[in-house]
Image 1 (cartoon, rainbow, N blue to C red):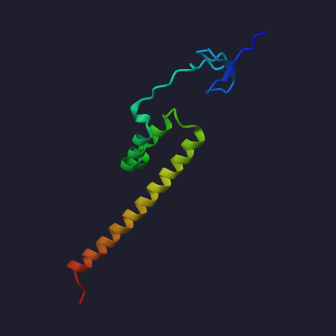
Image 2: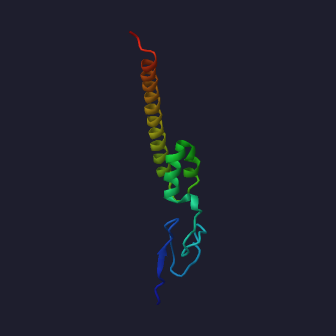
Image 3: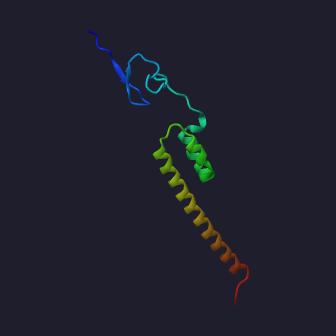
Length: 108
C-alpha cells in the first residue's frame, strides 16, 4: 500500500497532502509565496514610526505579517518611546526659555 506524503499547512498547522495547493481545513492557498504591499515591509514600518510616532500605529495593526501579541508589544513600545521623546522635548524647551530669558533680561 502506498503511503501518502503530507505536509503541514503554514496557516492552520493541519496535515494536508504534499501536492495540495489549497488547505482543506482553512481554505488557504499553500505552496505560493504571498506578495504583500510595499507599506507592510519592516523598513517602511520603522521609518513611519520614527517620522510619525504613534500616528503610524494603524499601519502596524493592518500588517498581516505580525501576530496579535507582537502588535500589542510593538504598540506599547511605540507609545512609551513617543511619550519619552515628548517629555525630553518639553524639558529642553523649558530649559531654552529660561536660558534666553536670562540672556536677554539679566537681573542685576
